[in-house]
Image 1 (tube, rainbow, N blue to C red):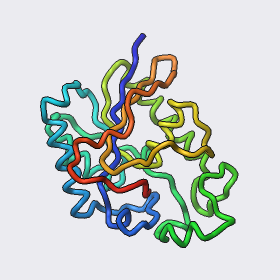
Image 2 (tube, rainbow, N blue to C red):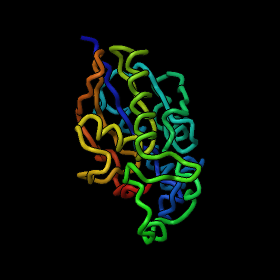
Image 3 (cartoon, rainbow, N blue to C red):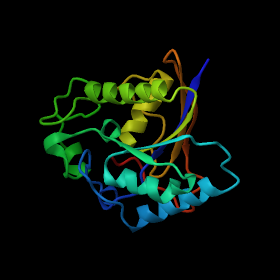
Image 4 (cartoon, rainbow, N blue to C red):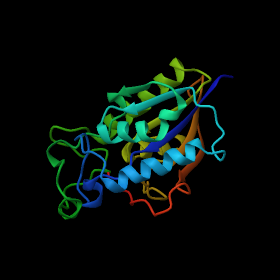
Amino acid sequence: MNTTRFWLIRHGETQWNAERRLQGSLDIPLNAAGILQAERLGQYLRSPSFDARIDVLISSDLGRAYATAVAAASHFGLSIERSPQLRERCYGVYEGQDWASLESLRALNFRDPEQAVEQGETLPVFAQRIVNAFEELAQRHRGRNIMVFSHGGVIDIAWRKTSGVALDAPRHAPIMNASINQFAISEDRLWSAHAWGQTTHLEDAALDDVI
């Protein structure tokens, strides 16, 4: 059976991560800490500790993910495909607001599958976009090793799909900036988890789960 393996990496820190502001689909660049995280990630990927063969490089089309990919994975000598299907969830009119003010709105729950998001994506619509994107990649690059640079929300959906966890259930652990997450998709579209939340390649603690 041809199984496609994925190394799914979250982008480095941005200033909005540090300020706990909701980025979503807005194109916020890496800050100095994020650039350093991407560089440390690249040092690990070039080291003997990372011995996997990478056949394909994919990035979200948002700059923070692509910049992380360029800094960390250029040594593979592969072109980096930019995919809008792997960008972060669009939160519409709420993007740019700080999390503290959003969390104070009792009627607003982004984890609720029924929650409407003005000018944005509901959680089920976002989740289906991400599942479709990875399954299309698995079919197009069947049996190959793919490294993907994307976002916290994307990693969350991949984790839920591999673990069989409902969209509205709590997650077992935060998603860190520049973390490495591994899973696979078989040719009959079965998802399986390999490893999640690797951050040993970072000397300093990465930021907590701030999208």
